[in-house]
Image (tube, rainbow, N blue to C red; front, side, top):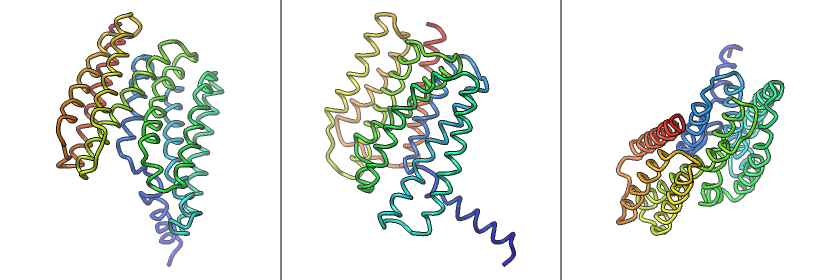
Length: 276
């Protein structure tokens, strides 16, 4: 075997999907849509914003190799995956550190306010990984992850301005609520598909609470009125889903529809802030 063939085989083994890509495909929308909303609300596309995206994606992708590495240590995965997972952790960690260093050099030290909660949730995730898939896919862990990924919205705004404002945290509240309600809706539909019981009334009540919060904030002119529209729409969707079991006929198509809902909601929120 030539050295070139050996390198090709090594690259193929490193690029295996299970080592790097998160199992929850919807989590990409939970990260990228808030980032896009924060960037468009800030109306900037500076170097610091792109460095924030690189750092955020690096930290986000570190979750999967960290999980594989823990599973190897517990004897739940192939031993040969251990070194590869460590290499991915090292590579992604280096990218995150370099991006973070660049942000600090650009004076975006206010981003450090987001670091503590992100690290805390990451530690909780690794703790849940010790219990296997049941721990990782628990409702609490999923909601915490959805809220954490929404931090890309304030991260983009802080990267643009270099400071935190009330709008920064309000935008995180809006995007976190949207992500978490989306997670509840998806879980309900998936449970219906597998004919498993789920608290249908709880899903509707959570959506009602989300709409009530944004309605109150908009009436007090703290956030734009247009934010009400996506929350009212997903409430109607939740009521429809809760009335009777709604199994998912085509999983891939369902995923694309959810992505479209996230994007349209994000556009509505951005338009609201532009007109606010």
